[in-house]
Image (cartoon, rainbow, N blue to C red):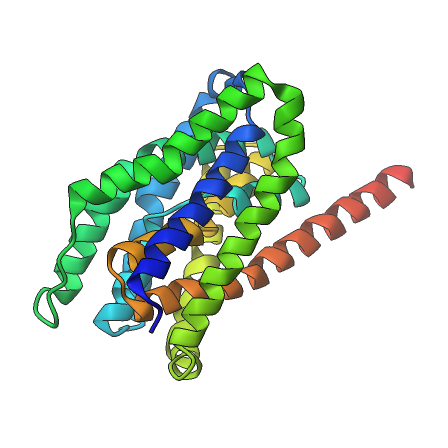
Length: 294
């Protein structure tokens, strides 16, 4: 079992550094998209904060997951966006500005929504099976400290000392990666006897969640008559969750290795549809370029 002290120190530190790195790359100009395309921002945020949990609830119900796994899956759906979705949007040649804006909005809102929704999930699935205390207010304060404050701090450094921010980014990036690898290794060791059966039981549900959420995001984008780039961004932002933030809840707050194992499996398996999406976009753009040249 990974010690509680280990999780409560290393994991929040890793997330703090990740969010600081996001802030270091942001400027006020990145928020101009909020005025330029407000509909896309509003629809994208609603898909992340409302649509994704609805999809998650449908998936865990249809797949009939055990309560503890269902809670882990739902906590994932309450933690949208993150640096990973921004990177995938960039690689897919999607609307990166929209992706960044949605990530920033999620960073502001999730410190409040994530604890409340996680409390509901724990109460809904585990109140009868094995009650788990969930400190809502303390969790909100913790998430504000490690998810919102570092973004604001990074933006301040970027504005006041842009050259220093540029030099600091690689150090922050690699430090965050190192800490997250330590956390992941610890969770794998704690769940080494459970990961194989967990993969068989939770793997299909994780893949179904990711693929369904992506398709839902793209479909809503088309229904709203957004551009193809915006539709791609909505698909990515709806289908790619912030596993690091979810791990803070399952590991540092709930200290539940089974839930953390679900999040860890998602962090690995979500790369499959993401890579397929990147390959599809590059192939489509290559074919379009050939047609235009012809």
